[in-house]
Length: 253
Image (cartoon, rainbow, N blue to C red; front, side, top):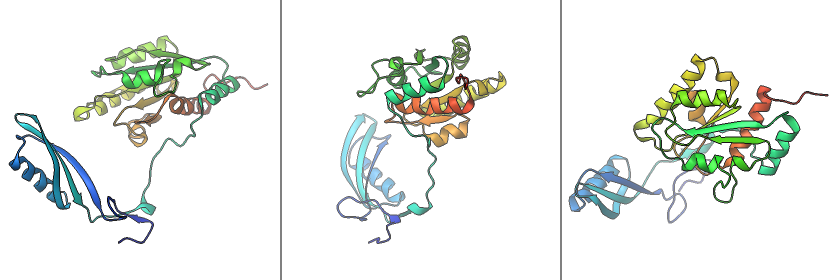
């Protein structure tokens, strides 16, 4: 058993026993042959003594499996490096006070689900007044004008609207991300901003189920927010960044 607190393994029944749960879908009918195929896949992934504990058909030719097994690997957490947003999240009231203190006029946030993405649950949760899970959306924030363009918005249309509304912050949601189509779409938007010499005019933030801050920075965005993030997280970063960029700041007396 691992005793070094910097070295960790997964656990299920007892500490550091290496127990893990794995799920997978296979392009074959559900049955004994499918279960054996799932078990062999787990073995090839390095799991010891894999056991198929659940299987179910998805259709005549596809099936789903859950497998328990043991991993011998461990991780030295002292050597890990995490890229995160870095800013401290403020409450809605703290964000409103920050805006009133530092900015001379309302801040304009414009958001959309772009490209072929028609799912607006994420952008609605951040933008719309009702918000999500008891956390109000940006429409309810004093000092913020929130404009939600909805789904399937072309990159060009989003930029045109951002310019027209004199936006300060652009929010892009990417919910449907099969085959990494979101990477190409997000890259294209940054390239569009740069081609129009508009990149420095906005704070640009992305969000979605498969979005994280490291990816956002790699693609040229100011920040990225994944699951379990709310309007106050996004607003906190945005107002700090706007202050840093000197956008709409009150004149010092």
